Image (cartoon, rainbow over all chains, first blue to last red; front, side, top):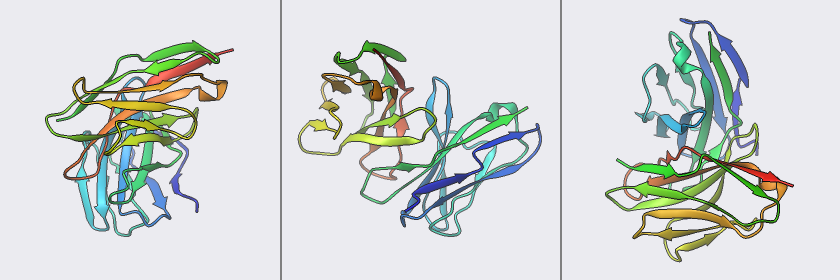
Length: 112
Length: 114
């Protein structure tokens, strides 16, 4: 099992550009999540999904979009990147009732 | 809404000394409680969790945490730390009812000095 994989590992964007962060899990988990981690702020939930075709907003959804067409994949889309979106992004997955989220290695994004 | 407060942003200790990382939460309804650990340049991984039963929960590497409902706390302790415990530790809560999602504290960076 590869667990949760994320691509790319690093990315530099210019203000106004768009990109998609990829996340895939091979554990057949129904829950998937996107977080951002900023120094001294902990992790903030951006979006989550309880299964294919079902997504919902977290604490900080503005400036992001998600889709979930399959159980395995949960891409995060940034439209019109802004410096405030400079952060480390983590994808995670979980199974209903387990309450053990498995995290990917993260994507470090810089917007300049 | 729920919130989690980790009272110390950084905790330096000497190797083989005991350590306590403090966590308090606020919620109007019952919650589950978690500690996650993040080693340098890695994602987070679950250290231990309290869902029900005994209020004292233990991890496989010697950490333990006690759920104290009256003080709304879930402090993490280890009687003797090792260099390999150097990491950032995050306390988190999840509602018992509804969607399975976490609210994290700000994190505590544990530094072990030889």
